[in-house]
Image 1 (cartoon, helix red, strand yellow):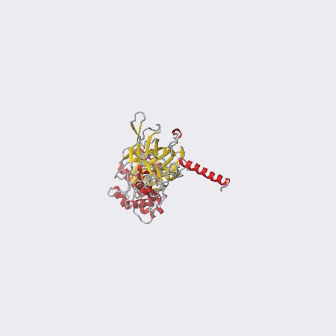
Image 2 (spheres, rainbow, N blue to C red; image 1 turned 45 degrees about the vertical axis):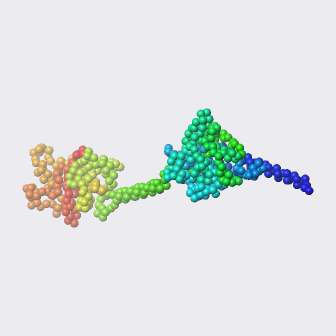
Image 3 (cartoon, rainbow, N blue to C red; image 1 turned 90 degrees about the horizontal axis):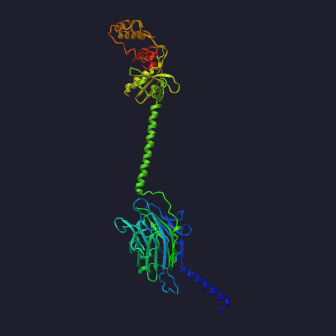
Length: 534
């Protein structure tokens, strides 16, 4: 015989079972905001700070899942349900689809009832992340889904515009589908709903376990639930699909086309109507940065091209720096014994870029410019030698620098330095401003021949050479005076540089004892010509 204590324990256990059963028969939950703790999230799904649940971003070929963490007992073995028929259920949710560009995106989302919360091997695109090519249509899937598809073309060669709602059982081929619209309660006329309108859309999925009728209804966020559903269909083959315990949630995927898929609120109830959502308190979809829609191959090509451009730019800079170093810093053997080498930039600035206004005169192999150094203000004269960039021209330039660098005479303008830059050959000469040297008595007036005066001056320069071996003999002087021979390498005497009589390169008369015969020009000019720029 049972004791009073045993009867009390038995009664307590029976009461506890009744409470649990009663709880299982009325499973209910509601989410107005989402976080990491209240759902099972897989793939690209993340809750946003605003509370919105983003199933996928706008990246191509991604999958996202979100499921209620606990299984739902769709078949209960009770006295009122001895055959374990499928229980009635109802769900209400708000979703929002934002395409990646101005055109249609892809591919959509689905309310999903499944025996598992993860789908290994599932494919993106038309399979919405819940099936793949090998298991599509298999009865072992035990899958029920209501899809909100934005791309048509499953099992077709091309993808067309979607914007439809379908009911799928174990396959991505819908048993029944309709274009997305709702019936206005007043006019009972269909009003189109664009799933990718970037606006929140309400959806209701209601299944009656007794009549086996499934109703699917949608409407804009601003409208109440329409009386007439979009889809109302008897589903006779749902009984072998749903197991005793199933998970409910959402799945979404992108493909070559992409969109961001959001769930803003969700409620569910077993054996009753889903609790209504307070749409005024739902989170707002955040404004996201535009994702790239380029294919991976194009991205790789652009990346490779960018790397090549960077390499070419670096190589070009190295070559330019190397050439610049050669132009300014390279020294040849003949330069080691020559006067100081100046920077081209300093001489270019001193002569104001070799302006015509700074030209003193031309003669020999080039033109002479006046100038002032920008750092010290010292006045200088710069001869710019014409060069054909030939080997012979460089030899003559080298010989002229070497000869002039050794000349030191009170009546000669000294060579202070030189510069070579590409085809520009420059000589920096001493500038004299000591006064005018008059070589003709002004009392003579115009009563003399200029040619005869130049001849006499030229002979005077030759005869006054400090080296005896360089002076002409009397026989040579007579031949010059008679016009039988021309003076060697003498220009018009009115085109020189300084107050002293100048021989720029008369090398064979002033060269050292090695007997070289390099010759150049003789020039003369008063200091007033230098100051006046003539």
